Image (tube, rainbow, N blue to C red; front, side, top):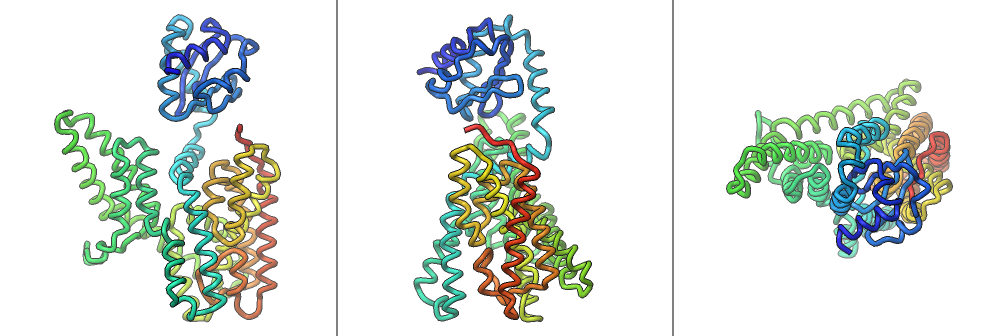
Length: 453
């Protein structure tokens, strides 16, 4: 069916054009306000060609067609309905503003943007995460003799596949999400910010650091590049657009990243790491517990942005100086609480796809690979992500109080028990259980809006 035929079919199934008060669309849905909702044939609409789902909420009938398609179908519906029935553009504008005021809060918009950037990477996180977990466990079990084998190196190469080019993948997805007509520009910018060649460049007497600021620096520079691109397209003649717009966008974005955005992101990362380690290592139990709670609660947002990599040198320094790092078990509670939050979602949701995603993500989640749960479950739903953060705060406080330390890095989740120092494996497992339970309980308390199938 053509878009016009799809539109005609939709108008007929909602009771005809005289039953349509207003029509508008968002990124994926054709949103209609109707005079009489009893005239709508929901089942027939669901079975219609091109329809991905139907939602009847917020005083609207929302028919899901997906990005791109929805714009074309809605445009045809608008033509069929006509201006007279639409009650003018003011009515549509008022409807949009009402919906925006109710649902498009800054926090929700940020979650949607981040979710859209990372959700396509979930299958890769799952695959590579499971491979890394197996490799790490084997490394702990068999020691250096295993780590130097060809098999270990090949498995490690596979496991690090997505993480080695994560900044490029995120750059491409971020550019798409923020409306760039040149999404590959985001990948190029991500590659530049993580390039080893940065180490050979000195600015203001200080050598640059590849990947400094993590994924947050990549997203910031991509947002800037999209803005520059849109400004260029307003002023650059069409005949020169192919040459001038990419050149100006790339040059200004890279310079802004190297001189401003990446140093700012790196400074934030470094400062957070230093403050957290010094407070957790304090002999004052109150300061230590509070710091453990704050560190556990904030670690998920750090993982989400890639800034958690800045803590790796701190782990190494603690292990070198005192023989173990108390920071790693505390931060690991973030992934554990994420598991508890996901179990709560799995128990309450009636969405089959969400159930499947949750079940698939729990296995790597127990092994300490949290990205599938973050970007596939808790972050898109909103409140479960907050529940996981709060649960991690409780787990982090318990770990800090018990002074649980790890003698090495590279393993998280349940496998981290293999690295716990001073025979405190049982104590560590108590902290794990507390984190699971806390994440579950906070998510149960906060609840969430179960998405339509």
